Image (cartoon, rainbow, N blue to C red; front, side):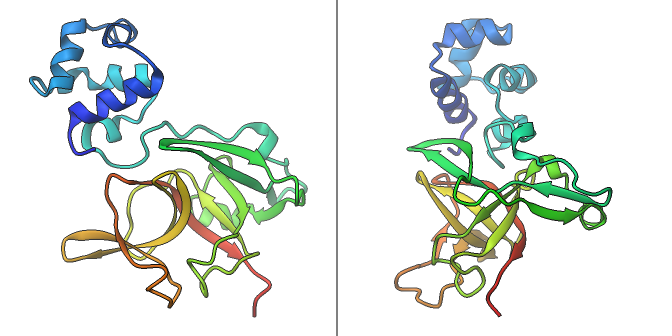
Length: 223
């Protein structure tokens, strides 16, 4: 979605609202919303209240960057307390995508309930907030040999801005994939580390892809 008009209309329709309903929620006139969606008016000064009403990130609504939906702290159920004064434990989860929607559901991984323990010193050194981290097992082959099936990865939901060379969990047309973002020729590309490039070709990072979060750590049994 390249234009402000497209983003406002998309987020409104995801809410199931009419233009009038959005106008009431944002404290604006229906005509203002209609003008924004038609492209006749930018109304940049009204974007903060529109973003708040829709529950989307202002940066995404204004510039089209990052994840649309506000990143909330993980529910307490996904944090397993502090087994020691210097350790933060995070439970394993599964990510569930919803068709063409950018929304992501977080479910407990019932197949493996053992938490991942991370040093608070390690977290602080990397400026990571445990409330915005999740742990999950890799079940896809696209990033082999960097990420192998069965590896556990830690994903930061805060980091949804592209960073050259980093690996991200991506909602690509409703499918969860892990890809490395590379800036090349003025464009962002999604690369699979798997050497079988015929099976896992590079793809442009465009409106079909939404960054869920950056992979900031992995645990593996593969030597």
